Image (cartoon, rainbow, N blue to C red):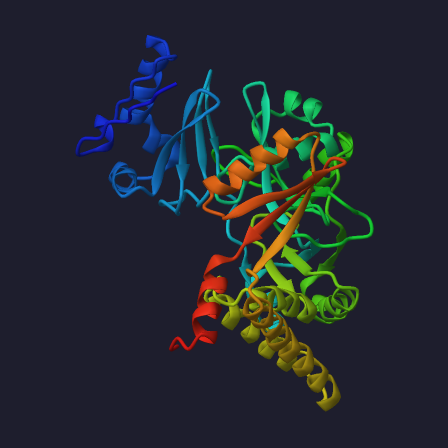
Length: 404
């Protein structure tokens, strides 16, 4: 299908020509763009118009149908919001950014009411799963449909009954495991690949279910849920969280999400020292492919956490050693590797039925601007080499005498 989106000076003058769309479909979508979009999304028409003109809203084709993707926030619409024009217009809101607390003590009292719910924050990849017509798709945080994640989600979970009964709900969760091609992390209870649901939200409004409603609904359909550590009074939560975060970090897990049990107040996240170091270790393996904000924010978290934990000299020394080793050792290893004539890169291992599925995922990565190659396919395991070109090029330049 060829779609020719034509733009004039405002949103009301957007039109498209679609060889496979009938006249009725064209009228529906044209009317939607002209009159309904800003009303449904609760975003001013001029904001939408500006976002389209500047490319913040992208028009694309999905399985022969037109669609829209929000590449950045527009009004109340989050980054990653997607709109599909099929038999009905489907709006899948982007997942809201969860803010982070650096100091637990004042934040718990100022942000929440009487009680809080603590859920485990798992180290994986944020995915929204939704039904579009008779199709179930997995959407990444930025609003792309990942073919590998979609296939694996349908293998891991029986989602048909859930979406037959709840077509206007979106499952928000984390894709996990050592064969997660985005964030590979080992969890004993997950293994190679797995999924855990942390939210259920409504299409269009993005309204989340309460902890109780979510738990009951997921149990009804036998779908996996993140661990609920407990529900506590706000005034007793500080000591509990400190204990929990140390236990989580000591076994190599990530952190917690602090929620209002009714989900009327935005949740907050808080992560372990070990998780900060793991992220720094990965980032400094490819130091020129990550921004300075990435490095700085994680070091800042360490400082505030050490202060609030009231760590003694020995505990601070251990934290400082972990932090320094996470920064220095991986960077030195990469410099040595590139100096030996190799590229800075990592191998992603995915489980696929055939080489064609591996190629599909590779094409998907290329569409995202990721430089990757398929280096091996054997026994339903595909090894994809992801190249960190900026790190490779800059290290090569510096070791050859380039100036910084």
